[in-house]
Image (cartoon, rainbow, N blue to C red):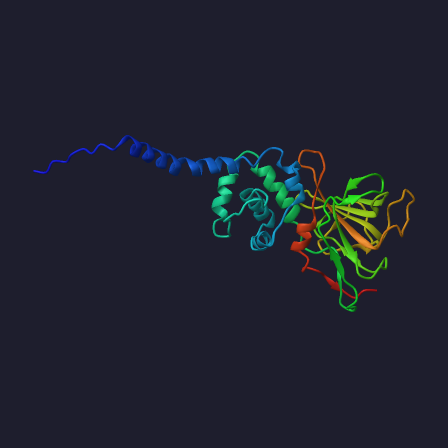
Length: 281
């Protein structure tokens, strides 16, 4: 007959065991609670969301998913807007999405991300099939200082022309949508505003001229909107020459009825290789 003898653990060892058990059970839980706290009611108006930060790793991830907006939104939450490393991947995206989808505010946040990213099909400036000297460039100029009309931040991205000639570069719609505004603005010159299907407002400014298009018209992604110019910075309609020829692109959301601007640069980077070609006049 075998008798088992109880072994009494020394008190310090017992407490070390409890500490190890607590660590194994609760540290992941505390990390989860900390992460999910990132999805707040104010997230869409935050500087983090409005700046739409992007890295090369994130861009590769976004381009690999059917919904770029969902991929971007998840990447930001998982990485605390790129401040932390994340192991988010195509393989575990569905699992991570389910974790966030049960939280209040997820639907509104996801809809905003998809409105900015998912309707975009084309880069807004066509490329020339008949001229090698004609090109464009752009950089991340989000909230760079501007002084006309008072000190302010630049709420958009400027696509600059290599050939400083107004009326040369065709501007096309990045998305399907409805023409919501057309005409002169002091800052934007001749501009068009198009409301895309998921609610974002795409703003094209400093145009030289318009295509045959009016407010209320339906457009398809790739439709001609007009030509790049240098109009604006004046109360006098038709003013030109106050800056080089370029296209200002802006993206706006109204999640709670109050309009906010978001940085278009990452979306433009996503579609910079999706350019329609045509013969320039």
